[in-house]
Length: 244
Image 1 (tube, helix red, strand yellow):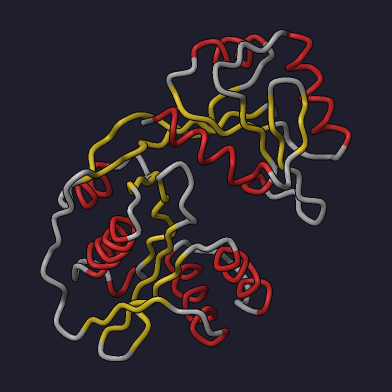
Image 2 (tube, helix red, strand yellow; image 1 turned 180 degrees about the vertical axis):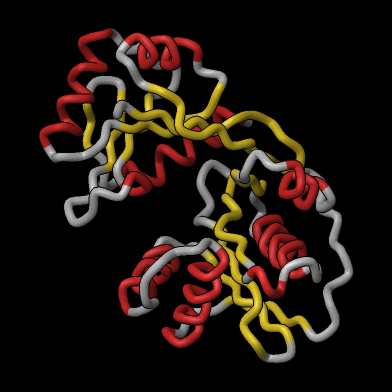
């Protein structure tokens, strides 16, 4: 399944990616943010020192930090990057689910798929607040949300007694898979089961579309317990590796 997930993640950037040896590389010409500038190795890649050097040069030429995202285990890629001085920034558990356990929703909670600018703005406010993203929420955030919708993804907004209280999304189906992501609940509303309800809703939508859900999460027992209670299990690791 990890092979299918990596193929799906690779396909998600293929249209906008450049090829450098055994790597697909996504560069954002407008931003040097690490999250939108990264490379993904080909399936079964065993990069040479020269190919890694060419990858580093491609990032440096654009004033970007050389960075890769890929799923482990991938020992040949790990060894080649370590030899070039790359270090691990993050290792995140990758989780999948076969049988969803749906918890009872909190009283007064509604969850719906949204598409309007007003609702997408509310989703952005919830997510930016929950993830401590600085700055005023505005048109750029709505455009980012809309790009996921254009790619056939789904965005949901949870309201508690009418107030925006949670949000999340699932990506367009690829290789029979869809990634559940961006599960967010502001700190003041946590501990009420809202995140579980949002994740369960999105997971059910993925199953209803005939796909298998997966997600990446923080390596924190509280978070993994949250998803574990829904039936998710850890199947591997997502590595973020960069050269400072």
